[in-house]
Length: 231
Image 1 (cartoon, helix red, strand yellow):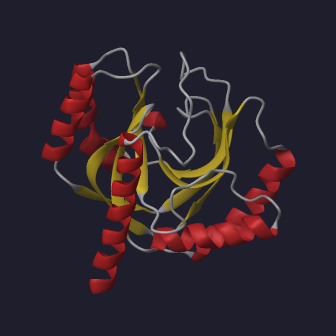
Image 2 (cartoon, helix red, strand yellow):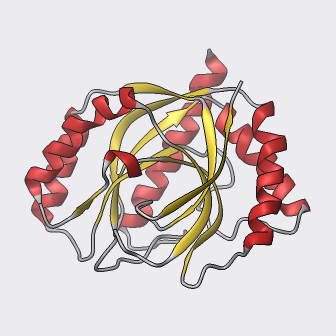
């Protein structure tokens, strides 16, 4: 028990470090630049995600409904696009900075690595406001880091390392983008998001599969390469 609490505390520290960097406008990690039309965004990435089930949607619908009351002009993700990022490979670009050969290499690696790992819990407890999006974030069991590290090693050995820049090299947490902005949001929106975050009811969710996909940031245009169940 002590090990899990310590690991999750480290994850919380990373989340707080990211929040501090955002507030100080000192971003040293990859972000998606805004666009006028997220649904038809031609910039494509190669990444791995978990697509949640109905039990997750039931937990976040009230959150999203409360956010929509604040600003209807923001792009809110539909249920079919909501996802938890597991491991990025190539960030969004137009044209994409990967080809079918890279996709097939990645598919082979995911087929071998993912099935060796166990399902794990994510513990969602707050919202995090980035410059161009709002995310639901949570700590996880240590299994997430194990999956990421094993995939990283295999991808590097295959010559297709992740091109995303991170603020941390361990204690990765679960991040679910709820909406994206094409212009800076108001201070009132900031304040309301903070209030919603502080009053939300924390909940847990089991992540039991990983899908390799190509798609834009909103996942409105996506192609599923493969899905693998965790043990």
